[in-house]
Image 1 (cartoon, rainbow, N blue to C red):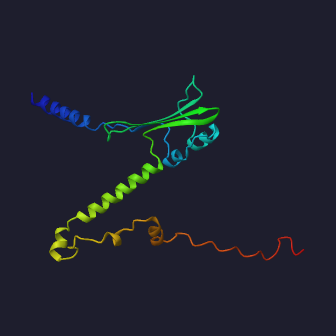
Image 2: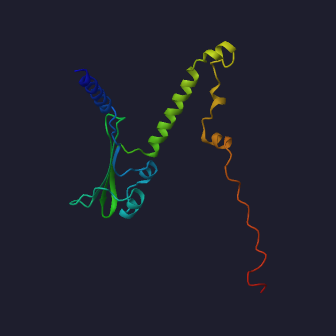
Image 3: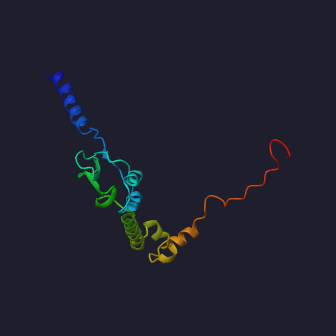
Length: 183
């Protein structure tokens, strides 16, 4: 009886631990559209311009040539609900008549998200309490900060703060002569 108990217990515990270690793959299907490209889409563009800008739709509509649907689907174990996005472009006389955007981000959306993120970071920094070590040593105990010195708000001041990584282009020197000799 004891000989069977140990292998049975080991088998049961191995089965229990193995069920929690199942790998679930991320599933990505459809057209992934970049916000810069979607922001450039305008009425009056030709089919070739839309194809150059957004690419060919993955699922062409067989019976309606006046409509292109760009679908995107992403499923992950980290997110309970899958991410679904759709951009529908309607054509009339080989030009874009209208388009519907359902969940595809644009440049304006990204700018708003970035502004909200900056505001949240600034509020978090303003309300941050100094650590125990900072309070004990007296360093960093001032919780009130001047936000104008911590982070610039405009893009121009940020550009002034960061130097250009490439030096300015120097003009090329004049060639000394031709390879075949003087003429």
